[in-house]
Amino acid sequence: MITIGDLALEAPSSSRPLEVNADTEVVKDVLSERLRIERFRIEPDRGSLRHPFEVSSKQALLFCFQSQNEIANRAVLFHRQNEPEVRPTIRGALPYFLGASTPEQSAIQRQLLQARRTLQRLLIEIRAAEAELSQRDDRTFNLLRSAVALGLLSESDQVGNDPDHGRDLLEQILHYESESVDTTLSTEAVARQAELLEEGRGIRRQLREVDDRIALMTRLEAEQSDATSELAIQRDRLSALEFMRPRERHAAGHAGTCPLCDQGLPQSDETIESLQALLSDLDTRLAASRGSAARRESVIDDLKESREHLLTALRKNAADLDAAAIQNQELSEGRERREQVAFLKGRVSQELERGVHVEGGVEELRVAERRARGQVARLEELFEADDPTESLRRAMDGLSELITDYARSLELEGSEHYARLDPGELTVSYRRPGGRVPLARMGSAENWVGYHLAAHLALHHWFVTKDRPVPRFLMLDQPTQAFFPEEVVDATDDEDADWGAVRRQFELLKDVVTSLGGRFQVIVCDHANLADDWFQDAVVDNWRNGVALIPDDWPSKAT
Image (cartoon, rainbow, N blue to C red; front, side):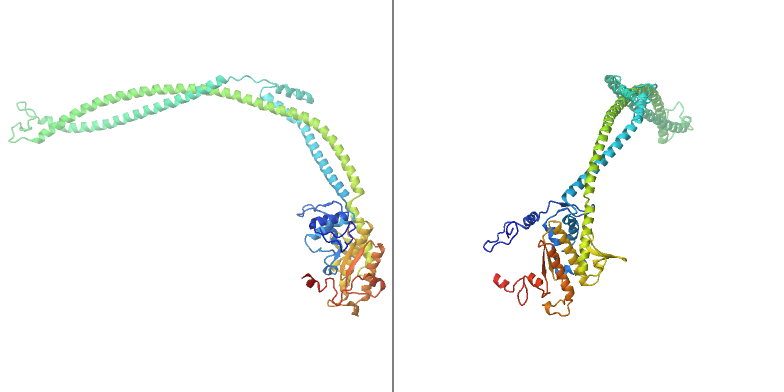
């Protein structure tokens, strides 16, 4: 921080060197403390993306400056108002600096908001608890019907109109003892069923094997029968050779004897021998086939007998399995009933506990509701006694009267009507019979500058008289620019200027400062230079002929 004086902010002596010992944030906090700015947090509007901020000297200084481009600007009224972040800051901080919104009011408003939320929550909880109580009879009736269905109560048990009787029945259900469970029997039944299932699978597997063998033997028998029939046909065809056998006096089947005439042949005939051998082979094969068929039929009969035994065993297995399934179903139904009874007991226990909590909770909630209503009523009374909205409206009324008086002193457009400061739009307007006319719709730079002066002088008059924590100065840069050309150097020689309007501006500044008894200072940088003694007495420096706020030789001295 640059040390520039004591607690009164007086300028240091030339013998005391400047000392840098802090950053700008510390300077801001120190200035805020010396201005007696309270710790006050500005919350953004609901739904806004802006962050809250603490009021400080940084915001207070926005009401102390009017640059050359701002004082004659009909679109903005305050310093840096055209900056996106500054405009909502001014709108939020203005009620505090006017005294319409205080930390105490903010605290009461937050407490009132919290108390209303608490009351609303209690009302919701009371409605829910009362709904629980109104539905209790229905829930009790449903629980008792479930108990009757499970055999825990008889059909004669009824709730009636006595809630205590219903509670007694629920207690009876809660103390019901389920039958004991024979876990050994249940385990054996499950094991027996699994054993029968495995046995049935084995019998069916054996049955399939026997059926496959019977089908195979039957198929072989059919094929053998076809082959035997074919052999028999061939043997019948060769049986004609019996008529060609030689006479008994010849060797049987002798190839040198003619089978027709029984005469000797000069050479033996091999065909006759072959035919006779084939016939003999066919006889042998037919005899073997008949023997094989008989054995195969015997095997098929044995397989069919085995199949009958397997079918009998399978039917017995199915009967045993049905019996085991019935036993397991009975055991399962017993377990299911026990589970249903246990589940019903849990619901009953929950209902009994809920009834106790709800009945006691409703009374507690109603007591808390009465306390919350009393708290809300007290806070509403405090808030209404010092309502920020009403306080801001009263402040605007007082400021508007001052602005109207100052506008009439300056003979501004619309000053015959009532001028008013709009804290939401951050502008000045006057209302005529045809409607409201804001600063942006007023004509001529004289009116723009004039209403800037009227508004800021009215604000500082309020700040001073209400002892608000705003620096007691207002710096204006060229308020008379509307009356002189831009290139003018010394307005004293400008005969075309509206010196009457210029005089009215400075006389208004003088009158406001005088009325505040030296508690307010106006700093003006301007080309105008009136010859009046009061004006000349107020001139501190006359920057002309090379003399300026920043002398020309400063850069050379710095090097």
